Image (cartoon, rainbow, N blue to C red; front, side, top):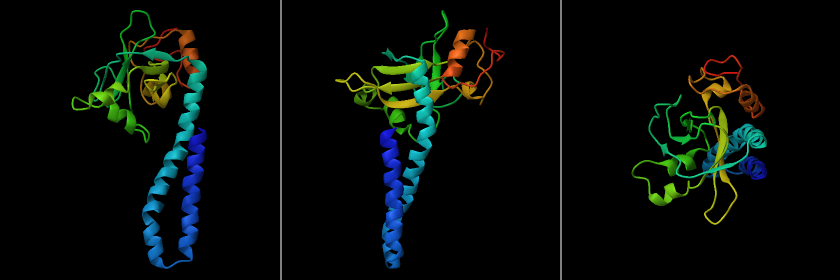
Length: 203
């Protein structure tokens, strides 16, 4: 969060500074700065849009502990059990006796690193290896945070927010992903917008 705030100030500050300089210079100076103006605007947008996501992740991490998972199934094609198309990871279902739950990397400005490492058949093994082990905090039926760690380290990095469309009111609940009242309440504490009467859930 601190680095994101510093980045936002830096990109916006640099943009304004160069704009001020170019105002008092010949027109060709503004043309030289134009690539920075365009990219700086994009980067400032990325930094600004990260704040709501960061607060969501903070709320999830206050509600759910980290789990360290190995050999997590993942892929880039459509998953038959997912509500969206896109690269996915398949995580254990907290419900007893229930099958795994896929979480999809829905298009996001900060998802490129993850998409590159999940990859497909031609993805280099050393890139795929960086996703082992996978850290996860949350409930895959609703929302969560995924992360990785350096091989020699023990702290999660590259945190990324994932969610089911049903958890944010963007789709109907997935049939069969049952959850009890306590699990629903915990998901709400983490930021999910769901009701006890939602189809596919049980009290």
